Length: 394
Ligand SMILES: *Cc1c(COP(=O)(O)O)cnc(C)c1O
Image (cartoon, rainbow, N blue to C red):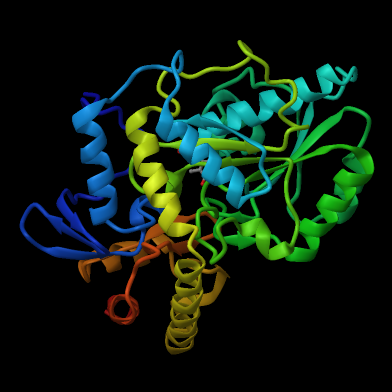
């Protein structure tokens, strides 16, 4: 019999009833150290006082009015994002997949309005993840995500990650945009080297093709800059954001330059819930905190600490772990044993991590994680790895 919750997830038999900072408490009162942060969503940990205050204050006044009216919090958050980034304009969504939908529409409309309607193709890369909508799965293109869901939305050119020849051969007269994650998340925490991102920007400048960055997972302070592309010293034309921007409240955004957004005139796009007062109240409070230079300095310092400890962990368990990769507090442990075994062994040690493709375990802690908690997380990973070695010996 089909479960009452559609069984599209393999869930761990854990249910949490309370969260505080980097910790979650399960139904039986056990405390778990959460270095998955709801898959890079709880950027400021659980129940951050400033966010609880922003949400409850808003909830007591007004929940929803629709985008038929002005929404002061939405305006303030858009102004802050425009102030802090390359963008001139922002559209708010409720999720990463909705941000993907708009990014694709915006790029096609751009070329339509420029009088080159044949430019509809979006170039994407293997291992990428852009959400589960029809555009999102067509963009990623993997068999795992698309099989059985055809006919797929046409107009995507899928290229192998890191194959420069294939890339330059694919850039033709029908290409509207290049869509890429500066650090692949679901793909296994795979950073795009800065010089590659610079190369993509140069090519887009030469050809006029739009550069769309998917910073749904790697954005909002995760890599130690507000957005990951800042490390490469370049800017995109369009950027998808979600996950951390609501810090636990469903919120997403598409940021764009004035030129890239020029086709999006009244009536061309919309969302009932996108940019609602509750989401924007939380998003504004979260973005104010995360965009503070001193906050980002701390993320970088803690990222260095975690990385160093993880290098030690890999050296201590060469049969379990292969290497560490990633950027900032977005780190992946490439495993030699099945990654899901490592995640399960973590649960037994009351540590929450997240599996990803390429046999990787993701560490995406709250950006507010403390030094003590970082040490504790690595101790628990060390214990989990020892447990696995012992199990293997039995
Ligand atoms: C999670 C994710 C998405 C999809 O976001 P949803 O909010 O789940 O729709 C898109 N792109 C990237 C890079 C992601 O990590």
